[in-house]
Length: 148
Image: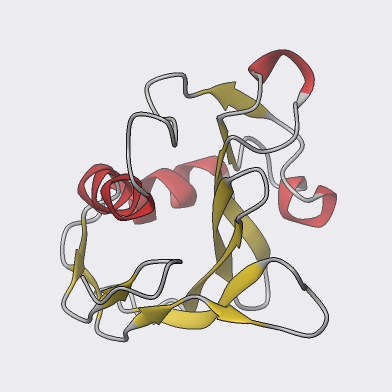
């Protein structure tokens, strides 16, 4: 179980790092969408935080999903995704109360500042890392397969 205070502590914590490469690949269960396998988000609290993502080229849309092992999803950024209530197609889900991970993060806030017409997937990734205090020391392979 994780509460809002613990979520904010983790979100605002400096010193988080992802050392793995992020590579969008085809997956027979997600086709034609591309996914990247879960990567570890190292953090000074040593909580087991994983990040996974999906890119849907036909739309296009991208999703970055943070999960705490044993708790469930705690934060998800959806850019140009399906419309979610009053938050539109680009929004951020995060933990508001203790039961939200079991409910797949039902609350969302609009993020109209991010869109795939103005920003590349890589640029959205960089903005996310900056806002979440994450240093990514691995490579980011964009969905088109270019090493960035």
